[in-house]
Length: 213
Image (cartoon, rainbow, N blue to C red; front, side):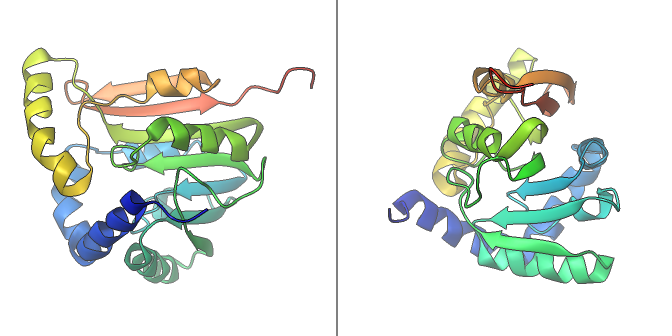
């Protein structure tokens, strides 16, 4: 099955922004997302799949005893991850691919991490379903993203703002992943919302399949 036109366009956008991505995001990483990546990475165990690995912002925070596989749609982003992994002395198995169609077998990972990526995935429910598929029973799904605010004035601003960001870069500001995670059959272990509810961390567990134990 061929690649979708939206995936081709998304790759073009992210390849273009890759060289300046870390510089553009530095203020938000520090003042909006804070220790969100630390919160996620501290919960990672075993074989970790980092979906939408971007420039590798999570790498410095993972425990030393995990193995990391990274996936991103953008070759330019993956090139930056390789450079960061070398600087950190970390081995990372990198793959180019789509979060909605993961190129891995069922039950390949103990942890799936997705930080600041589901806001741009065209079908986040499909990406979460794919994460569930590649997790072992009992495996963890760890998410960090900006989500719809709990404060109505900010919610209204987000709605207006994404009239521009969705056509330009496919970026959504009024999504929330928790309902999708529950609908996919995960059990929510912990959540944390900050910044007037606009930033959320999620720790969810894939239950054992019926009839197994």
